[in-house]
Amino acid sequence: MNKKYIVRLSDEERAICEATVKNEKGKSEKLRRAVILLKADMDGPGWNDEKISEALGCRIRTVENVRREFVLEGFEAALVRKKRTTSPTPKLLDGAAEAKLIALRLGKPPAGYGHWTLRLLADQLVELEIVESISPETVRQTLKKTMTRKRARRRAVHDSAVPGRPGGWDASSWIGPFA
Image 1 (cartoon, rainbow, N blue to C red):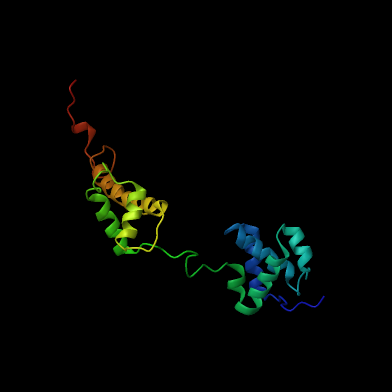
Image 2: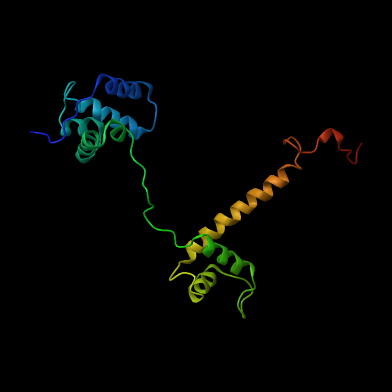
């Protein structure tokens, strides 16, 4: 069967693929792509897509995609998967909205409530028209992220007072109750 995308590796590219496979350097995906390129090389074994996919335990479409990337985008693009430029779901809260959420959380809860719940915070964000809609889980993750940063800063200050840590107090200078 005639292939639209034919792989012909240069000696340098073949050496890089062989070194990647031999040294098992990089991610497993990079290793698989290197093997696909080596096996699909028409100046080498020249295996067909079905044989390569069966030998590597991947889909035929994966082999076709690696071939296409090699021909259209070059060796590096075929060997290393490109990263996404945008996240699959856009962020609901930007920096200003996060700041408003934190300020809301630190303020007094509505009348009749003893403390803020995630659902109350989510409803309040919608009511104040900060966001169009938001789930309590998104509120939780945002608060967890910001609280983790605060804890890390607090821990850094606390660790300076722990013996054995750089900048911490020395246990030998401490005079205990049994000295």
